[in-house]
Length: 379
Image (cartoon, rainbow, N blue to C red; front, side, top):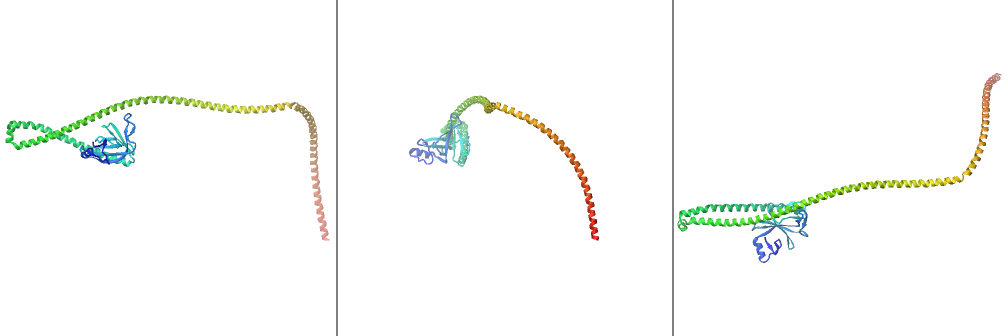
């Protein structure tokens, strides 16, 4: 790790003194830089995001040529908020158009980045995939080197008894030096190479043991976190069951209250109907009171009306007598009218006969006049 002061070296830093020389010697260089809001998963809930930076900060990919490794580093002021080494088994996931995340088992956390645009997120994800492939390639090469060194060490182990047998056959080392100098020099050179390869393999083994121990510790932390999460899941399940039961009880209470509200509404409607009926009855009662007052007033004039009624009845009786007399007179007049009608019909018949006779006489007179006129003309 290349450090300046208390944080990793980033673009724009100017290392000074021995620390700067160390950075240049180790050769860790930035290969991609962007800006984003940094978040980390809440270690207690493992669900909610906790902001690691108050504003958008610089997030960079670094390549360490000495270790052939890649890291994502971000610094907010003097605080390192991301220091994640990229491994082949990591995955960067886009959870929205402007947000992505990846899990770091060594840091035992999940990092999240919020970008200003989808284009920046896409570029960062593409670079993550490139770095991941490069880390995978570097791991495969290191494994090939380890296998090659282990094969060399096995071959050197098999060749050592042969040299021993050869020395025992050919004599002592002094004799061997006097008789077979060039072959001994070649064997010594090969042994030196094997020793160097063995030393490198030992250092690689120690390195891998260290990384294995780190992975074991990370695995242990992840196991404990998984157990805690399982316990929290059980706890949340119990709370969910309790909340569900409480929700069911509240629903039942709500249904009961709704039924009571319906009954109350029905009672209110009934009361409203009764109130309207009561107002109608009161208005009818007022009308009856007015009618009663009018009847009382009319009752006061009943004696006068009775006297008037008696006088009217007397007058009515007199009128009835007059009516009977008039009816008798009408009958007599009707009889006379009938007789007059009969007489009139007889007179009409006689008049008609007279007119017929008169018409005949007039016709005769007319004929006689015509005859006279003819006589006068002839004369």
